[in-house]
Length: 302
Image 1 (tube, rainbow, N blue to C red):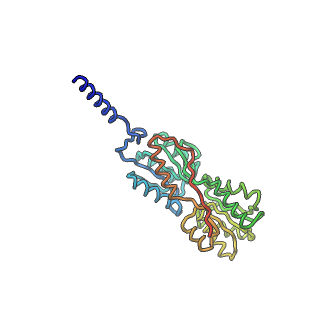
Image 2: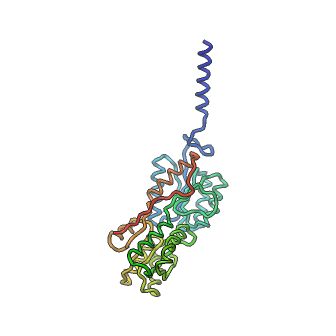
Image 3: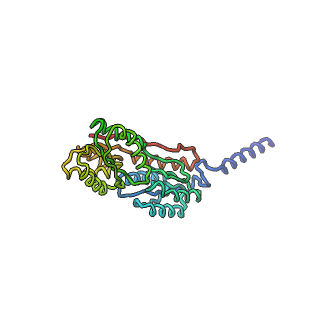
């Protein structure tokens, strides 16, 4: 009888210990039975790429039963910082940030660090502050792909215009870096100006460029919106110029299939969004992450 009592007590102690153990889905006291609240700061919703990214993150988060709060930075660093500070005040468990400006967003990242909120950046990095990981396409490789494509189409020494994105954005730096790795040695870059990832500005920059450099043979734009704007200016001028964009948004892919836009380096915003939500889970589980998680790119032509 004593043996039976002893065994029963041991089994009870094991059961109670197991019940009191912290769930593996825990970070800083967050338990499996509690709601996971994700804050998402998106750089802009005027760009179809970021709309697709936002939609993918929201859909995947809601499917997993997470609460998600989205703020739109409207491509303005001050608005971005204010929105992130608001998410911090709402006690989100994890912050997903798609920065407008990699330098300016750093103070907001540090505010999240001070509040003990993990930060994951998407598509663009933060220059300072502690970030769990960056989920992005290989922008340097994408810039190289664009230069290689122009070389294949036109050969060495072709006259090329580069339309840059937002100054200070890591995607601008990296896409330009990759492009210049090859273009500086084998192409003739006759113009390089920013158009802030905006279609209307891309059109204006291209109009001005054509006035001074009418013999341009190719254009590399750091995103599809600027490429499509440049294409409008080129068509209005009656020119035949190779135009390559970056992102692979729906409008650009349709233009490629129609034989207007020559090519686009296609990112995969749906896959990036799913990867972001999956990474939230890993962060809350306390898993080790790579410093950068790269999502594949694909060159899209007709």
